[in-house]
Length: 238
Image (cartoon, rainbow, N blue to C red; front, side, top):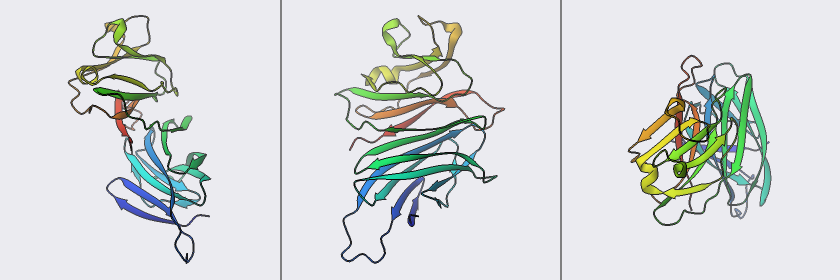
């Protein structure tokens, strides 16, 4: 079992495994992880990393950022999500983490269909005056979606026919298009206002030159309040 030292600052966690009385202390081998919780039936999640429970609850929609100290250049690390209220296990996975790489974990779905997905993060920056996006459909029971940026013409469609649990490819758009408008519709050959789900205009929070994970999920963890929303998380570009 790993021994973990946890440093909590705002929402960020640093997870560190220790070697007893190292002399001299070896250079740390680090991998990095970002954990997003959008699990529909629990407002707070407790994480267990290599059988050690992290003493900090993660609220719905929040993100935990961590650095894991590895024993070698590649190591298998277990992550488990528990319902903070009941203590019951929701889902778990084993992740082989490699030195200096970045990983994205997203917990979503419902108790009937929990999903704990992981991806290695693409850290290359977009070209000048562009923004890079990676979309995830995490809204249980909703149909596949299309996403438009900058308008609703055919040439404005950046994501097509994205189904529940699916990720889009990484893609780049001109920054002013993303800031102008982002529209989500039920999948179709062309834009239909009757199928529009969401529309965001004047997206000033989107910064040129950044990478983003955008998750199509629910606005709250309450299953009775299930309005969809686009959650936006910046990705590392070291």
